[in-house]
Amino acid sequence: MATFALIHGGGGSAWDWHLVVPELRARGHDATAVDLPGEDEAAGWWEYADAVAGAVREQPPPLIVVGHSLGAFTAPLVCARLPVALLVLVAAMIPSPGERFGEWWTNARYEDSGFGDVFYHDVAPELAAEAQRRERDERSNALQEPWPLDGWPQVPTRYLLCRDDRMFTAGWARRHARERLGVQADEMDGGHYITLGRPRELAERLDAYAASARPAS
Image (cartoon, rainbow, N blue to C red; front, top):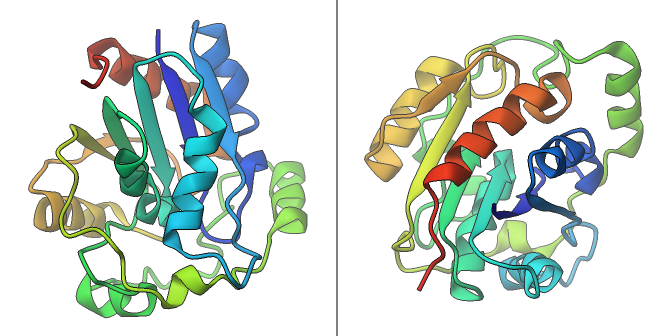
């Protein structure tokens, strides 16, 4: 079994994973969703990484770090703090060395889908309303900082795209994974907030990834 560190996206919180965590635990894993310090104006990328590392440091290996959306800027940084067996990026933004959040959109050749509701269109209305109520401002210094790693960590990495995603469309995400990581994206049905829209199916995918993960040396 594995320990999962679950990282939310921009403006989100650990609550975004609240339906996935019990599904992973039911499958025998440890699962911890982490609140990033996005509302702390002084927090930089390393403070984000330390929040994750501190939450799972005492948990047993193998450690699998999962970053959703903007959470993929933080997930690789955890590898500089702890031994990580596997990185999983879900509907994610993949950073390049030295890249700032504001530069990423042009550098990654982001393509707007043109839809109005890009986050919650396939989430149950009551869940979508609660998610919107819980949205937080991203005021941290991290968004102004260059992404601090010199290169992608030497850790196995999977990119999981959501075929119905209106934020990062399937065609764009396939190209993004290929251009930034040189990998072919894995795919599943669902929209951008897959953690709320299809938590059981997402947990099943993560469980399958865990079966192939080995403790990092």
